Image (cartoon, rainbow, N blue to C red; front, side, top):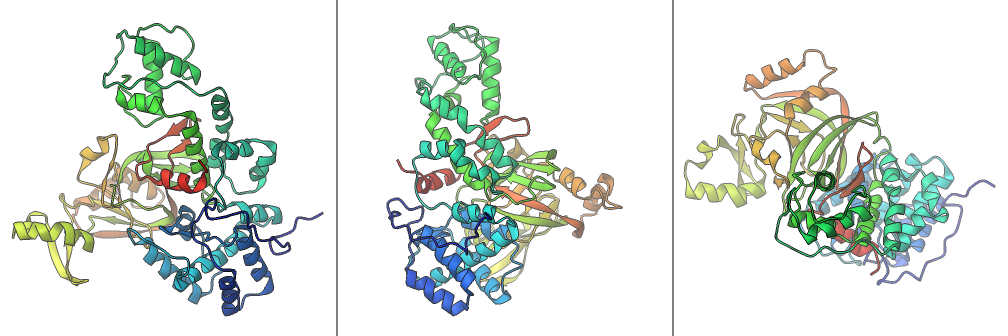
Length: 513
């Protein structure tokens, strides 16, 4: 019997989803949906799909909470190629989303008619996206029902359902790519460790241990690493031997720490993270990986913010990697996908109004020669403030190369004169854009098939000191992600610090205590 589509079935309203168990804390009135369908003159097929979608959610919002857009909304807003939207609806929705995304903090209410319209237009767009992404009815229905979280779950139950036969429907749903599959395969061993009672907690200490040291504490560390197989069984003596040093370096490597082979407070903190917490971390990141572009296994530039790394993947294999500096707290780099299509050599830096107000104007008040000292100039007025730009040169905050991909956040990749920042373990010092450690190498890779743009030609263009813009023959996909757990190309499970607190926010909505 052929599978039914979401428009060919009737889903009753799921009244078991109450505010205490819902993913979102905002709810629509069913009358609002009826009015929207009438105002938009939607056909019966689409109207039925919208009713089914919100019935399954008990009419809770899919894209918003009181605090603003959900991670799913942020990912989806740049993922979908809008080709099936009407131009009027597209422009209005894009403008409203851009306005909401640019706000540092929001306090939304469910009865706001503009928010209601934005929510339902997003869902309409989501239906179009499903049509484009999934040609198989069964795959589309699974994505329709499960791609956006509906209710809080007990994390261990959620993990077990993913690894059990009854939960493996997602494995054939088309919702997951290789990143998702690799991370999901890690769940069984973590569930086994949880079932076994997890690992013991090491006592807190400010002391640092190095190879050759002897202490009772070393025995506890060895037992912890033996439990997870991160150290091959040999002895559990008090000696910090070479085998333990090797194990600690490997542990530091997969947690984003400097692999110095020493056991200090930072290593102990990571060793003490409970297995249940890591299961939750894996589940949160699996949710994010649903939104990887369908062609993410092809040619793509991936910037993983918590890892402070940029990696170019070409046909599933790494072609180039480098450190990056991302936005510091309060200037968080946003998450989205786009296409890099231009390179600027010797760029001007048009200083954002927020920086002009908070940093430049106070500097000018203290020092009348501030602009001259920083190679800056005024070009007019903007939003009641002087429009200021920094001229190309050694002091320019964008360095010598800027990489552009159209987006509403004004986020781009760029070089930096502050090379020392790339050697720091935690690299969150920027104003929101992403500084790359090897801008010349990235430019050379992007221009490798363009005649007249060898590495030597790139150096010559930079040496002119002139502002030179270049359009790529073929744009390259860019994906900025926030993965604190993933499996790397060497099949190693990596964990990173939740530097912006996004994991905590999602976990609070996704899991029951």
